[in-house]
Length: 486
Figure 1 (spheres, rainbow, N blue to C red):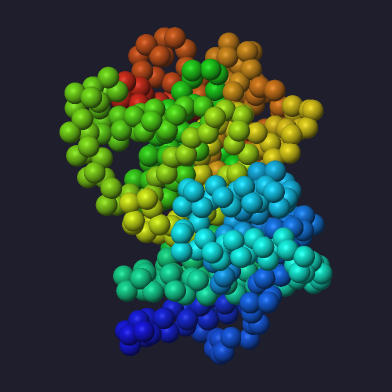
Figure 2: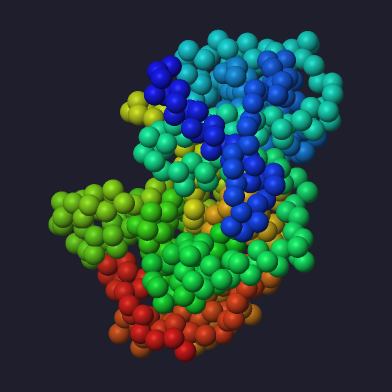
């Protein structure tokens, strides 16, 4: 290790200490958060411990139910055990169970063929398979091991973050380093939910309100791309840890709205994941090209070079914008969780480049009504309720804004204004979401390129008002201008 790299790592460690101090002691507003010495590593997560975690992750369903959300392949020093944990994690997220030896063996073969398990790791993975399913595999002390997994996950996450943050340190991006470290330090801490002492926090709330009023504390919301709409939302944009929903009838423009909100967030520097369960990624990207380049969809081919130039010009300041498409009725919340977790780890791409870890600020699902529940039952309303509750939970877990769409019923489709009571199938959606905005357009309005957005339901703010908007749908612009608010 070079002296410069060693010095950089030392600086990151100091930042870790400061964040750990803040997490542990929660300094009051304006108080100093001087770094706390970490000292030497006091943890003892040796090979034996990691092997026992791997065995339980692969074979112990009760263990996975308790701490499966904390176990990550990248936390294991043994690459073979990491490969087996990856198999167990994927299987559990999709099926809510642990794989049998036969299934795990087939999954391992598929991972080797698809190069998820690299050729140099193959011998270690095969050996790990024998270890977790062999007669000598130790499945004792499951509860005791589970109790220490949060500590193990936190330690490994902090250690990885220190190494990953060196490059950011060289760029002097201290805010990003602090955010990453804080997230790593807090891994596994919130097992009992967030404790909040109401009376003790009154000064903190007062200081925060003052900072907001003075413009010292920036908004936490993810921008919609339109200042007038941001100002009407409680968080000055889509709220982190919240579920926002666009409500509308068939062909009302729900997907176009989601595409434009994804575009706006990405161009503002936020990382966006767009999971589509209906329209293919090719079509989504075509529509995205149109709105990004201010080009009519029908002219994309004739203007291909101009479109490419305009999109490339936007790239330097844009956040990540990743699109994943799934057949209707197949994407489950746990699959979405798994995808988000995999993006948090660096990955070698087929072209040999290393894709850095990505944490998403805005997660868009197009749309929740055609997702699949984690565990299907014979009650459509319970299945729907489970999906919406899980999406809101994911938003909280990821400290991200979750945005999706839902269909209105026939009565709503005929109404001049689609309201909360017009939600199709399951009214639990209204109870679950934090903000619901409906799309409304008459034939006359459509002919003049106009529409209305109605705040149909909200948890943290007033509702019942309408935003009158201009549209340019030939260029896939859901909002080309704000006319007025009533």
